[in-house]
Amino acid sequence: MDALTHTEKVQKLFVRNMGPIRGIIIGMVADLSLAEDVLQEVFLVVTRKADDFDLDTNFMAWARAIVRRKVMEFVRERGKVPYLLGEEALEALAGAVPVEDEGWERRRKALADCLKSLPPRAGTIMNLRYAEGLDPQRIARHVSWSVGAIYVQLSRARRLLRDCVNRKLAMEGV
Image (cartoon, rainbow, N blue to C red; front, side, top):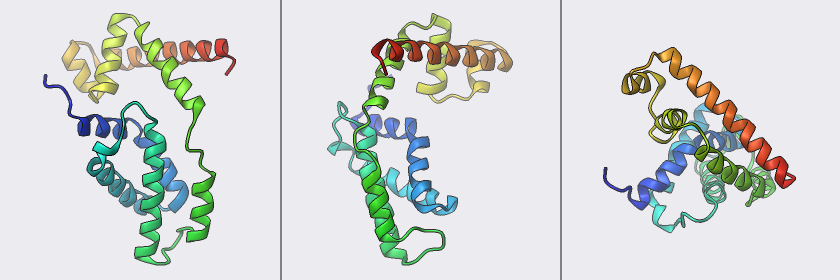
């Protein structure tokens, strides 16, 4: 398989973090339909500006800055939109969002370490699900298991990872 381009790596980071990004947007616009429009715009900007992003830095901090600009643009272009916070409120909210989240970075590192400690089959299933983005039905066909067995394996692996991450963070005093 060809190595991913820089842009593809940044897009993959976006997809991995799409839930929190969507949550930030919803918190700012409070309308699911409008939030989805903003999310799509943010993805386009992330893709267009991917070369500006250093993969060794905090993706979420970079993405939050793009979200903030896109929401503000959205407000200016559309004027007063129902359920949308005013520009002053958005500025205050954006300022309240921390740019760096050390706790998140520690969790991410702990998770990366814990992923290495998973049993090989669980690691394969987790990789297919989260790195490759396959749904449980496709994973089941790929490894010749039942869909139910895939759900059980994913559940067990997530529990092992959660417990491992919590132990590592507790050892660090987080």
